[in-house]
Amino acid sequence: MTYCARYRFKLLSPLQIDKGRPLELAFPGFATVTFEMGEEAYPVGHWVTAKIDGFTTEDEARKAGQQLGDTLLVVGAVTKLGIDIGFSRSTLQFHPDIHKAVREKTGRELRSETHGLMVYEKDTVGIIGMQAHGSVLISPNAFQERLNDWLRPSPLTERQRNCAALLNDSFFVAQTEGQFILRISAVEALCDQAVRHPDYQAAIEGLEQHLATQPMDSEIRETLQRTLANAKRQSLRSAYMTKFRTLRSDADAKAFDDLYQKRSKLVHDGIGRGELSDATNAALHLAVSLLEAELSSGASE
Image (tube, rainbow, N blue to C red; front, side):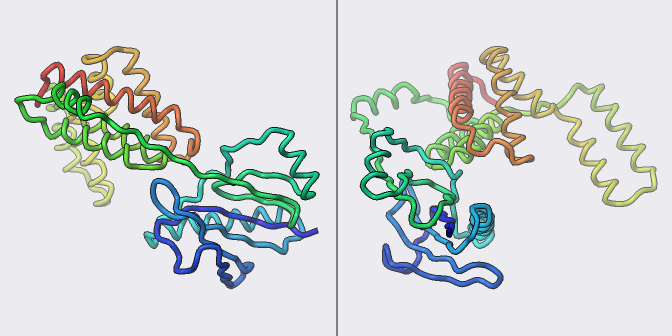
């Protein structure tokens, strides 16, 4: 009984091999990996399938596949190739009758194509996938109407311009996580961290003067100086909560605060990848509504 690890991923620039032609690559201390180029991936990139076989257990195959996935992830980032290894999930499902028919005709288990890692016993599965995408057209009248709605005599502030640009950027990003971070950042860009009350400023300046008299490591001193300098301004959380409460509602402020915590867990703890579809849609709604509210109110810096 032999097990295989199969990794299907997206590569920004295709390998210089013909589609469907296998390329075997050997790596020191690792099994030989067979790569095949597939179709173009929507909206960008190219599908590549990597296969490793010869494992005696499913667990060995899975560990090798996971090691390959981690390697692809690092190579894509560090060497700037751009590699999307997916989440090892399939979006296709087949009716039980189809599974039965395939099993009776081929003797194999039917599996749907996966973006990521798949482990299976060699020569026991049949893999089926499909690609489809659509486009939406906008009529000239609708386009003109939208331009008329937002044509303003006064220029945007830099914060408003940056917010709108980040939101637009998010529409051109395929990955949900990238969309989510850009949409949270769009709200951050719109929120000015106001300078605190003069009495608060005076207290911080007193602490800065005291710090200057204390003997300590230069790096520790610099860190404390930056902390005190940042304390002179409103915190980012306070800034966005105030912004939402002023222009929208307490409910929207709380909703965005919850989303920001998800963003922090994703960026700082690596928690949430592959689980942010609803969150990125909510972030878009809140960011757009806040920008609309500010533009409609005529707010400016």
